[in-house]
Amino acid sequence: MSNVWDAGGYRKNAAFVSDLGDAVLELLAPRKGERILDLGCGDGALAESIASMGASVVGVDSSPSMVDAARVRDIDARLGSATELTFENEFDAVFSNAVLHWIPDAGAVLDGVARALRPGGRFVAELGGFGNIAAIRVAQRLVLENRGIDLDSISPQFFPTPREYQGLLDRQGFSVSSIELIPRPTPLPQGMRSWLETFSRGVMNRIADPESYLDETVRALEPSLRDTEGNWIADYVRLRFSAVKAS
Image 1 (tube, helix red, strand yellow):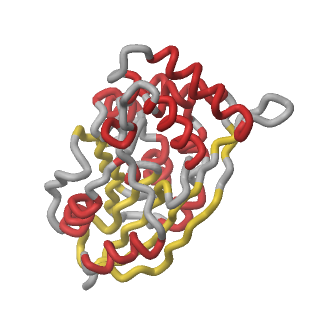
Image 2: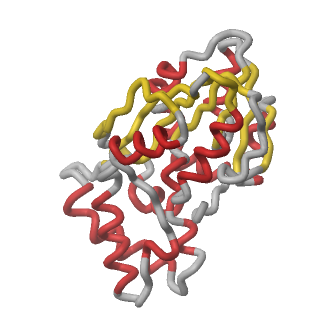
């Protein structure tokens, strides 16, 4: 992933990510005794919910800080990359929330997920879909272009259409049960600056003037994403799907 994750900052500024995970958890519908992989488990909030339903959960995340936070919740969390999974026919389901759009190499992810699942296993996930944070990305791109920097080269993201992602799943041998694009304007209680500090840390670490970048991006977004009472709304669009590995 291109971003840098800190569990404390994430919980402070982005707790809404897991708080809004109920719908995809309902789609997963964990069953007692199942073994489930939480891919990109973060601080373990949703893994903890899955475990509370009687499933055995393994979490994988690329951030040491997040893995440590998940282990505090008594989650079997392991440091690793979503593109380099080593599990073989081990899980009844793979679950992922708000992670896959950070990984442009979707093929490598799906290869690992397919290997990790038992025949007939489920892959249930939600990620940013086509149009996700479009206004935010435009503002970031313009601010960085003025510095001679290409946003996509330092912070690539993957926001597919349902048709595009279903094609990837089909080629990997999954049978898609459901897939839909869901516009979800999302309030940012901590404001846009805190959102940028959390979700564009990878950008900030690679430019000489991160504070000016933040100031300019926030100003550029005020007319479109800040209401008359000063509340910020992020232009989220989610792609949610459920698929089954061939038996």
